[in-house]
Length: 317
Image (tube, rainbow, N blue to C red):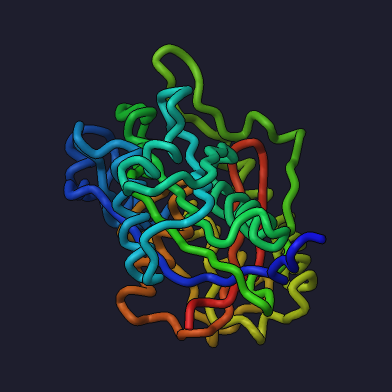
């Protein structure tokens, strides 16, 4: 007879890492036809962090993971799920490199690529593994080096992209503190976000994504609340993919956020970091003491694929 498996998982800690170099709007305006006002009014971004040659996806992920483990009071986990759309090597995959860098004894290691919804997908995978008894604890990491695939002469995209990593630790819990995920895709928008060519370059249908986010995304976010058995009034923190401030605020309003909730606006100082954006914003706010311990956070990511995913989680206590 098998041992009783845990009923669910809970968050136990957060961590993040951002490159030291900060690229401001004023600096970008020296190389492309743009301005601080033009960028702010269209995206909300003031500045972004750009990695140097020593700051790889693996090294940034490792530092974010190290911080999350310390926050959770752990030295090792039984599973690492790393989400990124900017990995260079096919193998060794980056989750394994993180495990090695942290000196872990032998966790299961998985890389996934669902672009901007990667962190939410990774949380779901870790929660399912823990809930089934296949893991007792997990590191979930979103890490990106989008500067590698940015066309720095294209003002439509170079103003958006940035580098960084965010991480969270999940552990087994008798009472589930991570709700079932609501996830899916929009096949007709498969090419809305693309990284291709030689060399590979990021491009997107910005208007198409904006239309989808403002007309379709809210129904999926409401479904995530419904599946979690809560309403928006039960939510303390709203953490959407940091794609554009003009998407974050209207989407929060569309699902009923009234100002009572803390809405993560990390895009203003971090830019768009794809899979890293939600954990990066959450971790920075958490470590600044801005988020309520034991509060409920609504997560939702969307983008390349075209994929989306979201769930409700309880913040560490």
